[in-house]
Length: 227
Image 1: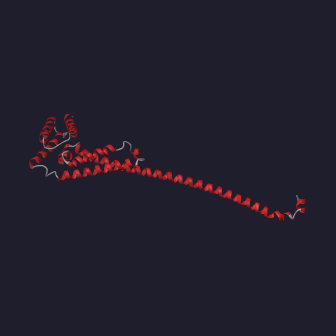
Image 2 (image 1 turned 180 degrees about the vertical axis):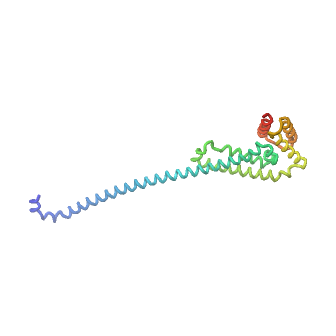
Image 3 (image 1 turned 30 degrees about the vertical axis):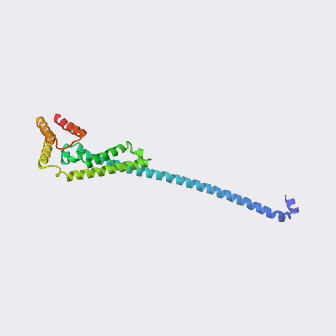
């Protein structure tokens, strides 16, 4: 090799440019490979970060949706509690008889709104997480139910005195007093039975009580009488 270089050293000037270019080309190719490797690594890291962020965001969104659903369910149940105070307690109902009088348009609207909210209520809140339309429909139905109840209740309170004559108001008061006696644990069985019978006579033809509500209330009172 040394003999060759000693005898043909002049070839360096002939092929020096080509050799230099080749060396530069190899260096550039190596540099591009390094750059591509670094770019692939960077993209992989960005992808991992994006996936992690997406998972975290999805988890946050799902938790927010579940909180929103829970809030709607709570509003639904709280409105039910307010309604059951009338449906299950005849003494309370006698304060505002319009709440169960289906001849009243506001009462009818309230019951319609309640049925729709009950129909759309999910058995499992999680079932609404991925269904935005169903979630919105249930939320709107519950809001309508709560508003309809508020309107009916306010109107019932406003009309408590004006819808009944003086004699009818006296009958309502007597009926409430008798019902309290019928449910009084301190009264004798005979006193309870007599009070309940008299209360029914006072209410006869005075207020409209839905059949289901009347039966539930009568079972409640009868159970206390028999206890």
